[in-house]
Image (cartoon, rainbow, N blue to C red; front, top):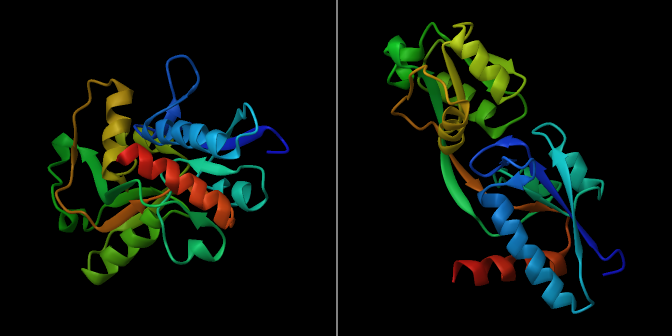
Length: 221
């Protein structure tokens, strides 16, 4: 209300949830929801127009951006976990996905067990990294897990066969393939190795969380 502004964080590289659209502006499913939240907050404050400020965040800095107050609400692909709730708060769930592995179609890798002896890339500090390592350990699959910088880095490494698979959330992987517009043929392994419930991440503020959830609930109804 005082700033007449809401600052929304977005991921430039996580289609179809949050990415830079053809016009260079934030676009995607999570972005659309945050626009509904902005409208709802503006109505609830009843203090005139509230401007939107978009701030790009990454998988690595998104939590610090929220906890520092630089971002009011993060509109991306962040999984709700109890550990993360020690630092931040979340909206009601907006989507549920599962961790999967993208491979080259000609590699004939179709199950998680086929990755034994192979190298799989994953972004550091994500729930996917933790779940993938746990799945390999639990199923006694001797696979090597390496960190990639981002989705573009991972796809390049996969295309050049420096890694045998790239692990991320299933819908996000599909979005990356669609955006790549490549002639290369990919496949997703059949096994999900984690459950990823997404929420909009925000600071600890009960009144703000209620306003966010009210707008989301109205949208879903």
